[in-house]
Image (tube, rainbow, N blue to C red):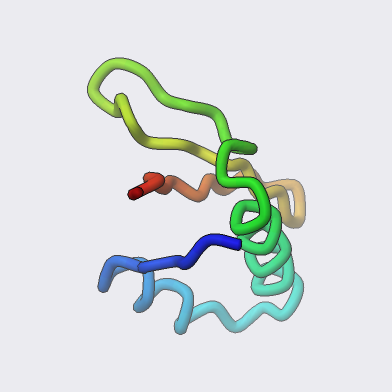
Length: 70
């Protein structure tokens, strides 16, 4: 299991989420990422070293962008 460290902007965003379904979708995605951080898609180009994991909720696609620090 890996540890998460959120940026200030991410903390602020997650605190403002009011929809329980969206919050649950993010929580589920974060649990999956903590179990296997390489589950996301590795970005290339300017975003090299950043992984992205798609979260679908209410016909909308959101993406969690993260890095794996060792």
